Image (cartoon, rainbow, N blue to C red):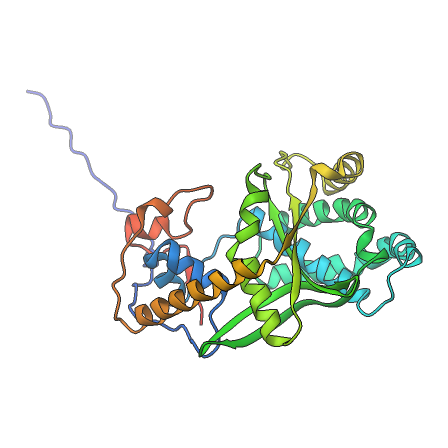
Length: 329
């Protein structure tokens, strides 16, 4: 008679897993603070996404593209703030080329500290910092007209203006005068530059909104154009490269082919486009406020889940879990 084999299971102590926070219906968006372009675009793209943002939810994990864009914006702010009020000349440009290495060292140190405060990943920040350090010398040389023809009035300046009873809020990347005309600088970092971008920026809502806000703020002056300033972030495999190798490659390739990395679109603000935009903006703001007040429904726009970039809240909609997200005021 065979003996039965007795199997004894040893129970392991299971570590308690922290539960994700429960979603909430509370909306904490303050219309009196002002409606930003990004929040209005979220509302138009997908009301469910906008609701999460208005509740204060944000993904904890940061993308490399956002980290690079934040660092480059920070350094450009220091650059144009440094020459603000200076008389444009060839001499000023030569001074900037000469002094840039010393200036860049301090600017990048501040940019790094700012990125860490925002919760960025250390290695990712260092890679992006090396890219910015490599690109900046070629950027300053290639865009010499920034110093020889343009008088800078401000950089990364906050605006808050009243439009039709609504407050518009945002940050201009730069504002300058050229040939007696008032222009606005808007900087974007992109992985690729579309062939259709030249047409799209002509009636881009952000360009028109910033031009409108500037004209309200500086009435009766008019904005002549928005200079759409694009920096292409290369899709290199950088995980096996040292920071020094990344910086050297960025410097070499951007110096050799600056047009491949730095592209600008001068967008002349046409009155007919601005007049139409004012009517459309007023209606969008009315709808946005009605939605915040619960007078319009919240629904998902599935067509906005995956476009060029996936929606940051696609995981929340798919699982119902907010694990990996943080709620901020």
